[in-house]
Image 1 (cartoon, rainbow, N blue to C red):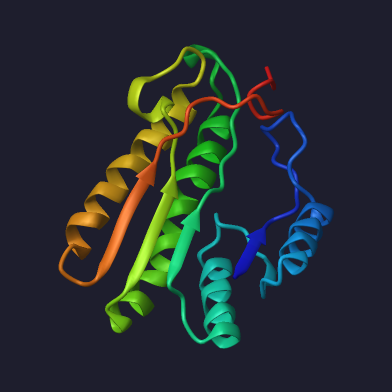
Image 2: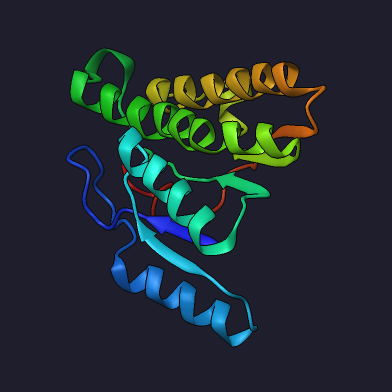
Length: 176
């Protein structure tokens, strides 16, 4: 299993993001249950990082069977007060980052005629929310992208599904 995160801050996010210690702790917990893992620092907003992550995973484990794209940020702002920086950082992380993640592995999966793509969106992407237009747009885009990917890959042995959890009480949700 490869786990990845980019332990840095975002200019428009006002809650603590994960750090290198969090990734190390996840690795330690995986080792405790006997799982093999490879940790990689990669920024999903950058295609080169996700391509490197996929290549390192294949080199380490020989193949990629499943990818789970679960990165997201959230911030609150009324639509009329929303800045370009807030919009771009949200879309770049939540939507473009998911695009980079899936695209980095899909060719490998197609060659093997097998793969499972699981993408985490949000119930907000299905309904909308006050003061979250940029977050909702990113999560609605993720849903549409995964539905399209599923149709494109339907006959290849690869499945693509999106999971839309409801709100969970975390620092991400309590950041306004």
